[in-house]
Image 1 (cartoon, rainbow over the protein chains, first blue to last red):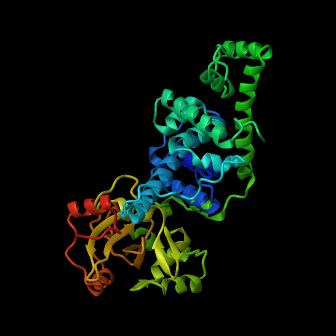
Image 2: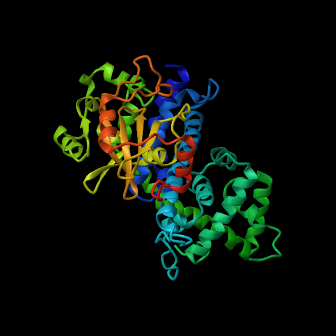
Length: 177
Length: 254
């Protein structure tokens, strides 16, 4: 086992809680979110040799941050793969009759404003990722852009649109607690 | 929202996100003390962050599910990177099934065509990407995605599933044979909108020297007899596979 693989395996347990929280922001169902975390962990171990450890002398926090950012990227890919598979399935099953779009049943009444979790779920994937990574996970713009494999400007633009959409969905500019 | 304010949304967001330089941050703080509208816009963004954290932070205090711990507890030699067959060679003495044999056996009995049970016990069957649904076994997460989206023979460094061939049965169902990097090989057929796992073969014989990604599957006797029983037609060509992947496996075939 190379040193960096050993360091990765040694650090993963410490980032598990954050990994689960990130997965939960993408998939509200607890079981599905842990499935997502598990798939990401399996994939991470398969490609552990690809992880680039920080330079020697890095603090524990720097090491954890590096592992976390890398893992978030794997979670993102696994989530998108899974959604593509399921979205395609929905289109095929119902789309053939000429119906244009399949409602996923989650457009809850807006009268009272949605719960914060339901509002997050309404966002387009890219905005949801941006909101989750920056506002919940507290990543810097650069770190979040790295996870999303986009320039920082794209990240901030998605984040901004995500914020506006959240405020509209929550019905009170996000200020009604 | 005031259009006269020198502070646009982007900078308010950056301020709340801690992404402004110290000097600009100090200026917006000073301005907000004399500008109620600005203060309110900042407060709204802080409130959004607070509510999101309040909703999701409790996840951090939940106990880590055992199945996630188990993934990390696997020694490197038994991690998912293990080529097919080698886990079997390292021995069944490491077996630590989280499901009882009876439980797994009952599920296995739902397989239409059969299963070779013993060799599967080297690992926890609940770790396989397979769910039980309505009395049958169906492909889940990454296996489900691979069966629907992956062209036979394509692999990469992080491939978890190798699809070997696709065919139609005498009854018109599409079926695909697969091998999991995590262990067994199998055969799944598209029925009722899911990939129904018909065969799960823990004794699949990939070459003992074989790398998972390169091993071209000599079909096991179990698999061959299953295909015969299903009335398998000619394997789909890659073009036919791509057409299915595009149109969906539930759409009527040509």
